[in-house]
Amino acid sequence: MTPKGKGFADMGQALHGMKPVELPFLTRLMGYEPDGDTPDAPALDDKEVLSRLIAAVAARSINPDDLAVALLQRFGSLAATIRASLPDMEEATGGNSLLQVYFLLAHEAGIRLQRTRLMRNNVLADKDQLYAYLRAMLAQELVEQVRVLFLDAHRCLLADEMQGRGTVDHTPVYPREVVRRALELKAVGLILVHNHPSGDPSPSQEDIAMTHRIAQAASLMGITVLDHVIVGGSRLVSLKEEGLF
Image 1: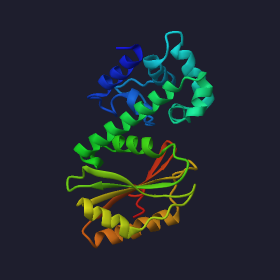
Image 2 (image 1 turned 45 degrees about the vertical axis):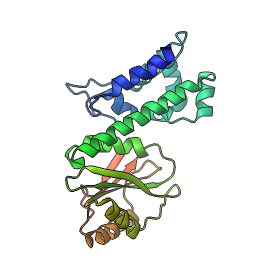
Image 3 (image 1 turned 90 degrees about the vertical axis):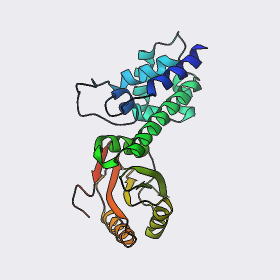
Image 4 (image 1 turned 135 degrees about the vertical axis):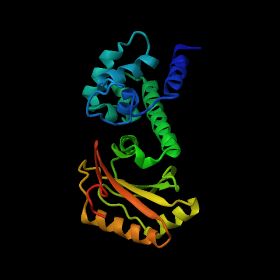
């Protein structure tokens, strides 16, 4: 197996069986920022995470630590580096497009691993894992996007689907479409999620009103809106925890 092929194989082996909230390599890659060290997961900084990714696929002539520092200086953060455009990454790395492909694959692998775990467990039983997933999905989005997590009777994830995508500060969402899709999936619980590209997750009056409209429409069909989470950069606001519906 070539060194590059071996790098991808090693990544697959490393991802298998990971506990996302316990392993900082994956959670930092996905945009989850732990508040501090834990006994099971000493914190890794952005440079260390990025350096490990680079070391898996870069030529031996490249110093992973030096390139990691250069990329972080160029793009500002690990999350921004992972989501950088291909032209920007090629310019920053002297034409090494493989790195960007690898970054995106690693990020997508992390998201899919988290989603699989949410399908197997009560979504609300581990808020850290749920919030890590939502940050990974929406923290770097440049336009507003509304997603709905459809849950079964055990509050396990049935599906995560985008219900609307709009401008930088507005996305139309139709309660009847959300309820129709919930009935198709036989969902009994919903978690509404959307992002504020401004980075401020504070809910607007329209956010609160939309939550009430969807909750009212869903309740008529025996479906419960369990929360509405707003993602603004690395910050989150739960309307349920704030007592706003």
